[in-house]
Length: 497
Image (cartoon, rainbow, N blue to C red; front, side, top):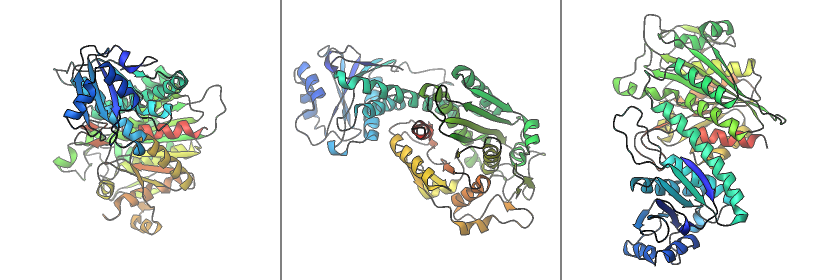
C-alpha cells in the first residue's frame, strides 16, 4: 500500500473512498465529518440518522455521493466516546474503515487523522498502522485471488502546523505495519516451504537489502560452540538446522546499549518421539512465530534507525520423530555446560532458546536479552488466546516492555517467576529436567530459560496464544498475527532515548 500525507481538506481529495470518524454520544458532528456532510448536501447526517448510527468503536457505515464531495464513496467509522480515545481505538477504527472501503471496491482511499485528543503524530501512527494491518490478506497459494485491494492511502491533515508531525507518525506506522505483514506471511506459509534453510535465506535477503550483517551457523559450527540442546532437538529431522544471527549497528550515532532479540524457530513441531495428536499437530507450522517476529523487526530497523545495537537470533530447526531423534531420558549438554534430562521431547522450544540465550550472553555480551516464543499451552490456559505472558528477571526491563506493549496495543500480562517452582525441574541424573508438572507449566518453562540468562537482564514473551488466531480479530484475519513485532519495535526505538 502506497501511503502519503496530503494537506487538502478531506472533502476535496479525489479518491475512490474517503474515511471519516464520528464520536459516540455527540449530537454535533466533529469538524471533518461536518465539512464532508456539508459538501454532500447533508446526506451524511441523513444516513447516520436513518441508521441510528451510534458511533461505537467498530461501527461502520457508508454512502455513495457521486463526486460531492470529490470522492465517490464516504465511509463513516465510529470512534466511541471522545473521552475514551486511545491509539488502539483509532487503529481499530481505521482498520474497519479501510476494510469497508476495500470491500466496496475502492483502490485509492483517503482518511483523516482520526480523533482529536491525542497528539497528531500518535494519531497518524495509529491510523496508518491500523489501515494496513486491517487489510492484510494471505492468498499466495490460491489460484483465484481477490481483486479487491487498497493500492494507495492518503492521510489528510489540512493543518500545516500538524502535518509534519502527522507525516512522521504515518511513516513510523507504515514501517511497523509492514514489518508485521512480513512476519504474518512467514507464519501463514506452510512448513514444506518455510524450513530452516528458507529462514536463513530470508535473513540473508534482509541483510542485503537493509545493509545489516548476517551470519548463518550450520550444524558443525553449532557443535563447536557446544549447542547440545539445539542440536539435540534437530537430531530427528532431515532438514539441516540453521542458527541465524542478524546484526543491526547504528551508524553515525553513539550506541546506547546492545540488545539481543531471540525468536523461537521451530519450523514444524511434531512433538518428536512424544508425538502430538493429529489435532495438536495441525497448526504447528506456527511454532516459528517468534522467529518470524525477529525477521520482521530486523527488516524494519534500518528504516527506523534506533540508537541501539540489535542482534536478532534464531535457532531454526524442525522437531521430528525418527531413529536419530532425541529420546525421553536422554541427557543433553547446553552451551554453558548445564546438563538437561529430556522429560518430554515436545518441550523442545526451551532447549533451542536456552542455547540461543547462552550465545547472546557468552558470545555477544548483550546488555539485555528478550526472547519471543510460542512456548506453552499452559500460558494459553492461563491468559486465553489473545494475551501474551511476560516473564523477566529484571523489573525495570519488564516495565519498559509492558509500556511498549501498551503503546503498540498488544495485550501482555506479566506472570511471576516463583522460585519455589524451580524444584519441579530437578533431575536425578542431570542438572535439571526440561519439564515439570502440568500445573504452572508456563512458569516452569520461564524458570528453565532463566537458568541460562543468569544475572543478565532478560525477558521472555510466551506468545503461544495470540501468535495465531482461529477467527478474525479487529486488526488481523484468521491466521498468523505477527504478534510482538510492534511491541519490540516500540521498545527498541525508545530504548536509545
